[in-house]
Structures are given as C-alpha cells and as structure tokens.
Length: 376
Image: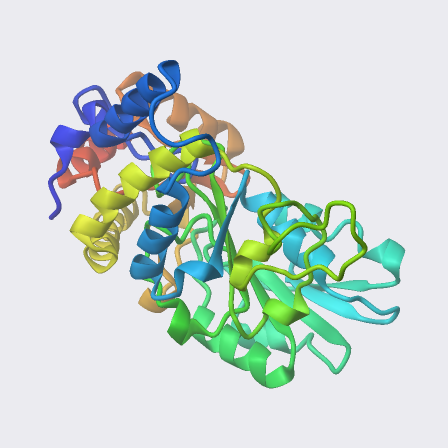
C-alpha cells in the first residue's frame, strides 16, 4: 500500500473517497502555489507566458504517458480539448460520429454543433456498466469520421478497452477521441501502445492540481485530421501580423495553443505530477484497484440486496465503485449519513459513487463500511 498521508492533511479530517469529483492538493502543490504567488508579487522570474513550467510539465506528461512532449497542449479544461477535436474535423454532409448512450455531458456538448453541419450523431445502446468495443464499432461505417467516449464512465466506473478501441478505429479509418479525465492520474496509460487519436483531460481530479489547467493530447497520426480552429501567437511559427502569408503551424499539438497559458495552474499541475512520477502510475493504479476491490467486497457483504454497477471483468474495472440500494431516497440518506461520520462520497444518477485514490488506505475503507453498517 502507498502511504502519502503526510502530504494530505485531509486524511486526518475525513475519509475522503470522492476524487472522481475533485482531488485534494498535496502539500507540495500548495507550497508550489505559494512560491509562484510570491514570485508574482515581486515580479521575479520569467515573464508571464514564457516560463519554462509549460515545457517542463509537457515533458512530465510525456514520461508518464509514453508520448512526446510535443503531443500535449494546455487549455482551460477537458471540454475545451474535446471541442478542439470535434470542431477541427473537416466534416461533410452525411458524415457521422459515434458516441455511447448516456455519455458524460461534456462529451455530448462537444457534439451539439454537428447536426447543423449535416453530421449524424450516432448513439450506441448498451446495458450493464458500460459499452463494449464491439457494440461501439457496430455503429461505425464508411462515413464515420470519429468515435468519441470516456476512458472511464463517470456514473459506473466502467473502463473501456482503449487499446482495442484505438486499434479498431484506426483500422476503420476513423478517429478515436477520448475523455480521459477519470483515467489520467489513476491508471497506467501508454499512449504509444493505445493508438488513440486524442485524449482530453483536466488537472482537478486524479491529478490533484485544481482547476484551470486542462491538457489535450493529439497523436502525430491524427494531427493533420484535426485542424486548428482558434489561431493565436502561441500556435504558429513566426508572425502573421500585417501579412497574408500562409500560416505555418507549430509542430505537434502546440498548433492548438492560442495565447498565454494559465501559468498559475501549470505550476500546480507540475508539482502534483512530481509526486505521481515518484510513485509511478502502475503503482498508483494497483493501489487504487486494491482499495476499490476492498470497497466492492465490503458493500456486497454488508448490503447483499444492493446493486453494484462495477463490471465483473477486472479489465473493465477502475478505481470507481458505484452502487445503489434501488431506492433513490435511501441512497441520498446514506450519503448524508456517511458525511456525518466523516466519510465523503458522492450521489450520482446511478447511485452512490465511491472513488478512492493514492492517499486512501484500508482504514478509510473500514471507516466507510462501518458507516454503512451503522445506518438503518
């Protein structure tokens, strides 16, 4: 088991099992933000927008996710990256994009402009905890330009087979666009092996770095199929001021950058990534799975009549465990009663969502299960 409790004061106040909503900051991230604020107060260091923190953080992401630093670009959030991708495709009337039914709203919003362009948004029906790759690819045809979905479902914790999805989309000649907000920081991902086209995520959940620093990864193989929609000085080589010269895009995903980035949030992400890199994503994923398995087993033991949405196959399981008593009012009451006992979980449409991360321990699991056992 990983022990980083000294970095997380929240562990001394509560059993916080809600990283899928927002992750707490490590002490080192708080310290980095204090240092950045002091530099800003006295205007010390490099000018805004020129700081090496952006380049350093892209290098960190490249090492963690096995990709080139040039494949990453920063934006404000996950939705921004998804919109960059869906707006950047050169759509034709009659094209389609495939998306699982009941996807997270940010994914669905990124598709809202497509029907006006004559593009069909195809919904994939599924039952259980999540769609299979076969179910998704059954909706793909010769006019499919992209498949878009979450790496891990927000409401059931279902983990899709990204490797199979990426490979089959590539074979079918369509892009694979992934909302990775519940995967990056919690799972070991090898982008070079996955063959996905694009991955958009944000720093405020499993990366434990707060709001304002989203990241978009675009594969070199997909870069020419997703054109930049927004144009700014940070995405082009040279200057276009006062000329009609053809725009020369920067290599890789940096072409999607516009103006000065959020340096403050980048410092937070940089600091949190140092901890993640020190521990290692495979170790974090194994820890999270061990804690989640204990939660899953405990719920099934204490509440045998409850429905646990977690997939039966370990390959489709994540750190997220969702269960319901079958009664929405009782689910809500359980969440409130656990909160009163210092156990923080979340109520979502499918039921009670429990999301442990690297700072959680079996003590937190025991505290949560004791809370469930003591509730009527």
